[in-house]
Image (tube, rainbow, N blue to C red; front, top):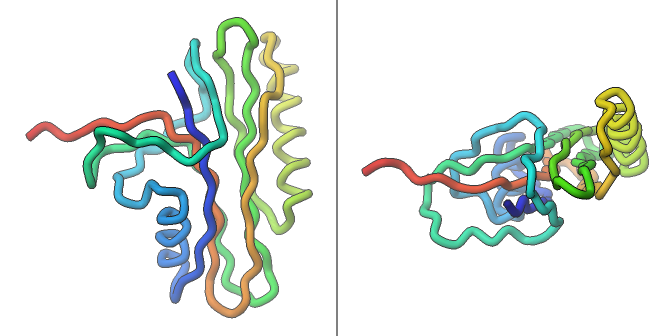
Length: 157
């Protein structure tokens, strides 16, 4: 299985508009997002990239792990990230999400969370990657998102 990690930011008249614009930037705005916990199945390859969503239709279900942050005070920053750790042989693993007001703070939080999870799960997990996204509010609400896209499923017709 290929899990694609993508990110985006947006600005809008309201927080929900900023979120929608951030999703437009990720290429997944036209799907019904179904949130998953943070488990990476065996035989998975996780890659930070633009999502390739061939054969899916407007409104299909898209299974994701998402980190989202919205701020609306001028000068504040919205930062988010997702990190992942996987077993080298099996490909199974875990995602950890974080949000905050600085890139450095979010990266440190996610790294600490992954290191802790690797330790207490007592599995042969290794940190494989961290993807972050963010921007500063300059008057209108802003949103940053990082999304791990697992796959899509259509609706019965």
